[in-house]
Image (tube, rainbow, N blue to C red; front, top):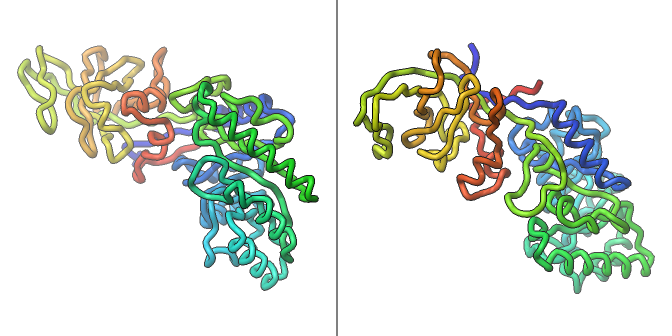
Length: 367
């Protein structure tokens, strides 16, 4: 049987997006951020077309990529917990140093495993979440470099305001980070990779992918989406389509109310189609009485509150709609297209939230 709800991933479009990003930031290398199962879309399929330089958030994601792409370079970008270090050193994962205590634990694990562990310093230059504070950075980096069993692979930071090209904070942050790197190099420290730019900075702050930077990180732009603010200098395309099927079609009389809360009342006799997807599948409640889906290339407005498993739409524009017909919730049908960014605007959020919210029963299909 065919699943009622599925998401199609266009791997050719994904590769085109990667190539556009790589061309824009050249000669910087590109690290593909595939955390949370590639934002829930299926990391193994993504990894097949995106080279072999990946960033993740935690150890199980790292191990999955190591198994999927033997020889891949996999880096944990956030933090590493004490009980996770041994296995990550054994697996050859690049680990973040967020303080001296973590560096010592990695060094000890490298000794036990008879390995050299690659590490990168994570500096907190303004995110306020994880990392080494600027006033402690030089001492921490120097002391870490003296520890046995470690290979100093790089230094990086993250920008909380890079989606806003008019905000001066990111410029100051980049300047401070570059000063710290220069001071560290004067003290004899050398870094293979120096990076601060994620997708937002790639679009809004060109200085974040020019010397001394030689690596960028990209996640949401791979999917063809953007933060709702800022520039969209990258001409990337959506890679995903969310689809379902029609469950029932009925002609309902004027005065009929639809769904929980009776939030919609029909003003005239209307052809109403009930589709087999709801908020459990990733349709935001914010689409209630505002969003639309596409059936046979026609726009069908959402009418009535979205339920967990079903959504009612006005299918008056579709002449021959019937149970089993395909419905495009996200993606292109005919001359119309609905993107994660469109849903994000209605929900008052960003595309990350939309993509990561696709439900567990939604089948992932790469093509």
